[in-house]
Length: 330
Image (cartoon, rainbow, N blue to C red; front, side):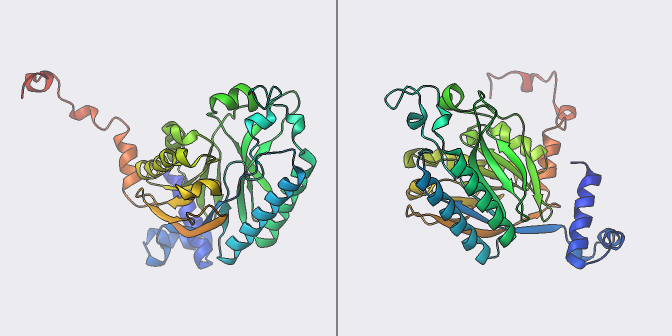
């Protein structure tokens, strides 16, 4: 984002906070009044929900939706503005259940096995509750495409008005997903809540730092990373990477996985210093954890790193000094 664009965000935030006009808020910012300090915050809830992996099971799809809405109400009671759910929160179809050759052999997925009518009902119910609670709701789900195209593995972003405002599709798919299950997404996705900017990542994308550095360049304040977390033994590397991305990019990372993996690493929210600010219980149960995420856009870490990643060092490099060129002497 340009410096001018960032200033406009700061002015809008100040005006919303004080009730002033845009012009008055701009004047106060330029006068560096304390009440317009460039810090915004959003109360964020991260969820760990039960894992449902059979999309043929209509009752399970309904149970999943009911559990999600219960956690949404829990988040609302804490004053959260946004709740973040794991990958496949509505249902995360198992590769062997979906396989046309299965269950013993994994092959191309038969998406006619998915009870799409029940899923649509649950998506509508989630959107209605988001509007009722005035709660932004981000959750993983299968997004069906026009046959014969495979669906996307997606994160839906539902606003506090109950509108589906955008959708993120997983781009860096696993071997099984790209071979047999899903179509990859095309682009990063951002959205804003109360002047904080959020990005989305999904599945195994924690393994790809370029996903997260792209979001730093897009000036996000927090990345919402949703994963399945089906195997507790696989959780530690993903969690460590989430902390690393937070620290190396100096922004918040919300890490949402399913409840079974919480016995190893619960869902949590990582601060820009690369440490957990809050985590869900490590007991395998559906739950939420809530904290206020605040971003000080005048903090020097991110501007300095952007400068360092440019050509800052070129003018300072030494050419032709034998003490620099030779690498075989102390």
